Image: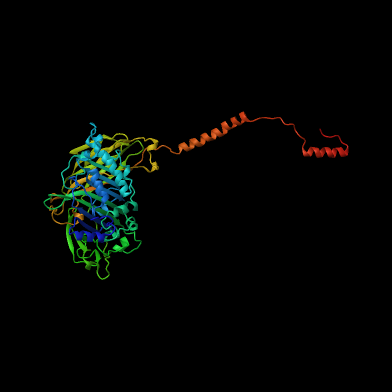
Length: 590
């Protein structure tokens, strides 16, 4: 039966699938609202679409049903195993807000795992060339993939090329099923200067099963989302197990949107929040295609209601282990019509009763800055904080530095508590001018309750005048450092992957009860380079034109002008004087 044209009519598609007696795709949507210790509000949307098909086996797909066809064709054409992309406006303030559910760096980030059969997807004349290796074929797929994604999300991903693409050896492991360790099939790139706007959010919302017409997506009003302290939207595609035995796999599309509203966005002095104040809308129904649609409100720090008041009250309470800590949530089930009450509308209201409490320091935190003076040399400082009182653990640090900052690796130093801290693993890939950036990966052991400082000196290169940006005096951006670690957990982690858990607590796989995986990003750097005076050509043109006009113009007039001798004629005054003198009988003037 043809499914064309049903994407704009969710109810028709629901009736069609139910009429066929099958439900090939599982859809879950969640909204988590977390009051922060600073008084701000953290809202995290997560939408999961799980499709029971297997591209890894090379199966041909004719009907994509609720799975976005544009993404399904991308996976099939480019032999993509995993795809992770994020667009972020603002910087996540870890010391004030804690850790996010899914971290992302400022700007645009894209990392993709390709299948090991990617070379078979290219024309025969390309494969038969003897010197074409796996990496060359992956580079071709990577270049075309970035251009396709640039068109899908209306972003500047087409500016991703070899100068900002790296192949990390250990930092970005696959998050789905499968044990792929060959980094030749991995590509990672970041555009720290990418500006996120409505033109990026609109195509992202169109990928949702119900679009922005029903369910939690109705709250995504662009005017409110971008009038916030932090905004990040991401999309993750990966293969996951279809059942607990993992005999077959299915594709998971997870779309996330994180936003932080500060105290002054509403312009009111009252410290109270609601769905209507944050999003200018309320919830009236769940997505009719979703099997689960819930709103979670974090009440861990408010067990007796002494910190804030939550209304309407709900009897549903859920507990989950999130980022190594046990959390308690009030749950609003949108699939239950009783949740909306007599008004047929849900407007969760949070009214503060007491001042915010002091927040506990995060166990892992990172900072980065540039030191030095002048425009010739400088030094990059990266600070990694381990705030655990008695546990030491290793972290994996990834630095990607553009080629025009020439690193002096012999000046690399790692110190903890005033002593040298020798990394147990170092992977360094030197840059090539105008071809590839620096790649530096290190495995560092962080002592308990310590600050580890990583420093390296660099020299600024002088670019060609055509390589400067339109605003060169603003500076050049350097992407964030990536810190990955298995952090000690406060409570025992749940390693049972067969148990149903909320989406916000089940993204990163967990294999140990005593630790959990965490990835954080530092601030991006803004570095000034030696910049020529771009007004000098204008000055030279003006001076040259003046000299030509005065010098050459005068000489040209002298060479081309014709000189003639004219007889002097009597003037009017002289003629009048002669008339008067003739009347008086006086001799005339000559």
